[in-house]
Length: 248
Image (cartoon, rainbow, N blue to C red; front, side, top):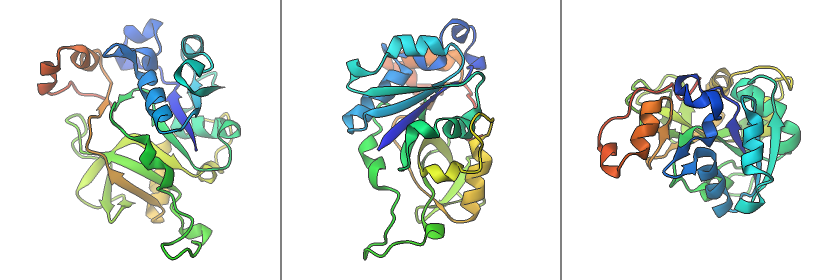
């Protein structure tokens, strides 16, 4: 399995830090955000990693190199301007191959997420070994998180490991997912496209599975959030400042 880390965003709400440093290279607890992901992926045996970038992307390549120091093989998908999440995936299809891949946002912090679990969530056969028809297989699998303070209404409902757009209670998309490449067939490489509308389309077709992850998870949207994460551990007892919605 390959992985993709999204690192093309401008990080407007993290300015002035992101005026000179790409958001995924900001350090949390002594380590760049994106390096936390790379090391966690490598621990799970996922070593081929595609990183897309736009804003200050040269810094990302110069800092991470080919990934060999981390035990990874890093490939880069360069974007002139950020193409949004679905557009970034479509633009990197030639690097991701034809098999399902895991993708994660470069600006979240979830140091204990075990990527070993992502390898077998999309099934081509039922429990008796019978193949699913192509139009009945889950097209992707999303990891949801309990709703953070900045997004109390959540994104998606969940019933028996199947996502829905209208059910309750709702959870927030944790920006970690496993996708079949054909999910992005309708997006022309090089065009901007958000992931949210595409997800909702397939959710309506009952083709999106998922589960709730309850480990440590932070979506870094403000300088105050970053400062709190880098403060003494006791500071985490206080709510983090409002951040961006997780699914757009």
